Length: 141
Image (cartoon, rainbow, N blue to C red):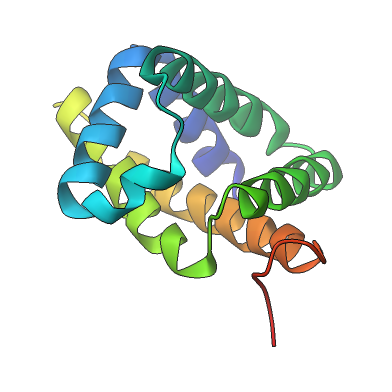
């Protein structure tokens, strides 16, 4: 990620109400993919808080590639244990972008592009972590 993209990711988060962003993310995701609702916990309040906290932590970690990769691989291992498969990442990425678009009407295309790149890095390293989890049942064959 370029320094400008990292700046845009963090600046976009700074302009967001993270709980509203999380609510919009889940609304977009479950509307487009209702079958994914079953892999999420029932407590949506805690879920929204965790979502916002994780976005913040990932955005902060992205400047340190080693720390970022460690964090996201561990996140991938945990999520594999929840039943998240490789085919779930694309709908999640689309829902995240849709949430930014709905919650930040003035979001710039370059901000969304920065988030797409950031999410691609997150997804790729999470899938690496999931593949390294021998108990996940997910991963490379």
